[in-house]
Image (cartoon, rainbow, N blue to C red; front, side):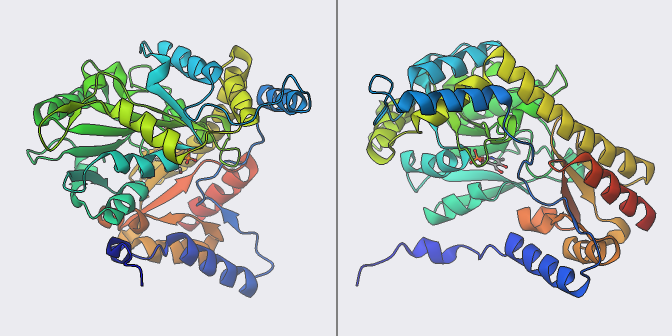
Length: 397
Ligand code: PLP
């Protein structure tokens, strides 16, 4: 019998969303008269922007012609989309070369696959609570994980604490806490990485939700970051591509790792080799739709969608503020991370809110040990539901 990768057996079963779904289904069966409002899912609900739809239609029509048909494309993405992403970075003052940008089917795959480039002996540092993919993909490879405590004391923005790591994951704006690192804080992380010869794995999946002009959208807005950081981004939340699938990863050529013999190697070269070997690219049609996101028209339409979600977040934040409940996020992020009232545990509050108000959120404990006692609400629903859910919550608390 083939020997399996035993590290897979070290993974904890992912009960979070299955348990949530089971509890909601049971409640729905017991109370068919109640309207359940779901504010737990991290999925968008608005349709794709008209500019994206037009580009998709046009690309489909092209595929119906001999001249416009596209078969296998470049694994790392078509030049038209890499160029569009490069130009988008310029709007944040970041100069990249197109061959530092790799188009993919979303940030989750790239975040999971990037571990291929790094030896299993590297120590990784991961904030807690955070998007669970960082932890699980490193457990699969058997790496030693050090956790960075994110708590109300540090506004859920942990900073270097003197411990050494070779790979450091940062997520800003953060899922689930909505907290966003300032430029000065990211500078401290870049300094740390340069001193420790570490690589920062920076997840900017929610950068489009940042409205505060002082806050950085990209790690490369900080000097020195190109020598120490890889950045992941996605059109999932920026442009509603959760089901359409497109993202991009930046691997700068100024970044180096080393071999066991101490020779310097560019991860950029290795990532190209990895992607051209194990990935066959994002469909032409999807990349045309994605390129439309970066046109002035597409950008304006996507920002309108984000503004719609942001209004939900504001409504939620206003109610929590009125109630004197501690929370982070909701301003530069689609997530509100609230303390469970009355010192309730995450699951206790989940049950309480479901039973008493028929409102569904996500228990913070599902995102790490420090998530216990907290709860995540998302702003991706419609206004009517957000209003009704928050009115029920306000009455209840
Ligand atoms: N990174 C973070 C922090 C996320 O919350 C998510 C999705 O929820 C992703 C990455 C994955 O995005 P994608 O849909 O591009 O795979």
